[in-house]
Length: 115
Length: 112
Image: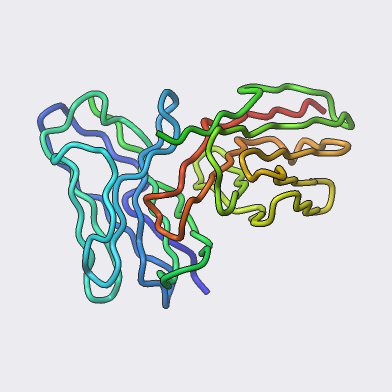
């Protein structure tokens, strides 16, 4: 079974631009979560999508948005990029079943550098 | 606000030595997970502990969940260079991804 894939793996943008990152979950997984990882703040939850609906949201400004398609693939968009948005953006997928503890499987991440 | 503190932040030891990494919180978690992350990759789940006092072993790695489910430890016996990486603990208060809190990580380096 293929793992979680993220594209692109590396990206360089300048301040003010916008960026779209893509995540393909493991086949059969319906939940996709996005995280931002930085040396200073560690891993922080951005949002979770399940069946094309945002199910949960972290404490990030509205410049960070996402969506999920009918095939469970997800995209994350960051508008008006700031230097502080430079980070590793990780996507994780799970089956998304209600209740109980589910294992999340992480992709390799997209490393974004904002200049 | 729930916080998970990991210690130490950095650890560099000689191959063959033993080490323990700690993950502490003032909050109670329904489960706690340990991940290892290598450079350029996403975190990989090592273990999930759900019962207070639970001990799980994975080859040379021993994981323990505190009795009160507020803390956890990871002990590595006879460390190998392949154990090098960033170790993250993550506590969950329910099944929702937004309720998973990650620790800041322990960067482990094993010198040959």
